Image 1 (tube, helix red, strand yellow):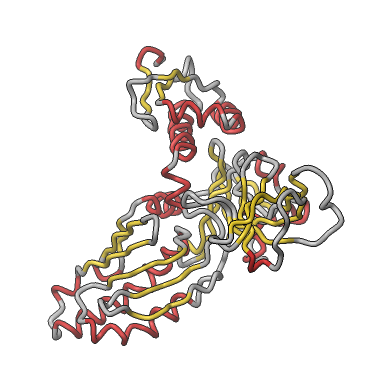
Image 2 (cartoon, rainbow, N blue to C red):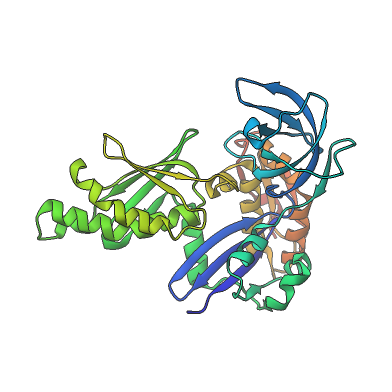
Length: 368
């Protein structure tokens, strides 16, 4: 079975898909201009300890603050310089989670001392025998020397099948085997997943027998989606149409599927309402957060613009953007430079206060 790591360049980000003969095995977004910070080593400054939260906020060099829990083994005094490493990226409206590090660089003002591994580094380590297929020399320049012998350059990293599979990860509705589907709804507290029966309705076996078989056959594909979308924290899953007392029989199927995930999510059992509870470690931001905020929307807009403008003669179409997108573009010059390099045209936009903050459209006045 041939496994490959495919790295496709887009404005401001590199889309990374791990594929083999069975399809999409892993997926991640790497945004060099907006790194998620996981693994970064900082010299920070301790703020006030927060006993009610069980930890201390640490001021970092970029003007943000991370949280160092008391369970990390240290409780610094306010004003102390401390060495800390990011173990969980900012997500869900919360700052970075930190752990204390020993070392001799603790004295001095807040500073970023070393960057952690990129998403591509992490996937290359997880799949050590897989070639890294790239479609842009700029990706090669960002690879650490140790990965360059594995690199292969092609005109297009993603084929149509991979493009479709990756694009489908943005859809909250997932098509599953047997005609079933699932709806994924992230909330601030947890991720809710609702399975809906399809093909089981035409099964001639007894209803509960048919529903059990349908859920059993669909669950591995659904639980793989948790990994591909990097859904994390508390996850509750409502299987389709199966009596609560029958759901315990799905435990083995769920645990076997979760065992394939390198983060080793824990299946906590079924609630009194029959909901499967899963706990998956939070490390990097989930895909839906990366796609839904203003930075993600701005990159989607630039990607669409590049696809329309690349190779086209004359003046490219201009853009009108809302306030949040204008701010996101101003804060990500690397994405603008990528759009110029990938299209051969300088992207141009103007603020339109009449648009929603994350809204955008093509400016008809500047079409070629």
